[in-house]
Image (cartoon, rainbow, N blue to C red):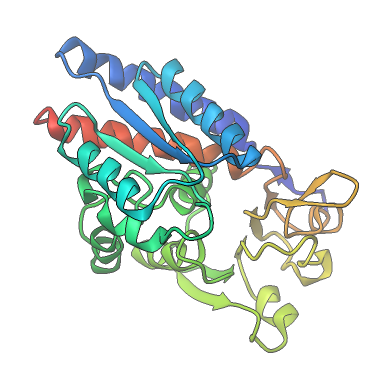
Length: 285
């Protein structure tokens, strides 16, 4: 069997961002520039890197973008006040509060405070309910990006057995719902799942999002399956590894995402897509 074909998330994300830039130019010509505001609290180095990458991608797409930098000593009340002001600012189409927040701040309450129309992470209760009910709303960026990767390679979900490893609100649960919308048969596996290898072995599509480096072995993979590795784990030697043992899995899979360069780049692309949709809605189109 030939090694799996790579799903190049970096290239697909670049294609998506190019399409977003084209569509943003149409809105800008109508007098509406998509606007994204990122709220960054504290000095977490990784968060600063992520925010710089988001800012860069947004600027390249023609968006107005700014970062509200707050100190690590910011109170819950002050952070909620900042979010409230952004909710009321009609020039702002997307609000993203960068996680994690410093200790002592209630992240759930902050997310709940964001205007659902401007919740471009798709995490407010209103958008989560919309996904569960099959109604319009912002979809969480990483699972939405996974769908785009599958679509761009004509990997259909209808009638397929899909196994999602991980049950977080960021990836596992929303991908379950997105795949059900596409008429897939979906199983969510987690730390309490018995005989995980056997569960994975029946999957036509595997989405690994548990945060355990190399958990999924190549021998678990059904020959020809599509494998989307959402995990980003930093090893002691500084190397980044996904949740899937890439070298062994690529010998059995039909399609596989690398780490890095697979699912990761799609998250920012879908963040921009949600912001564009919000701006278009605000423009009445």
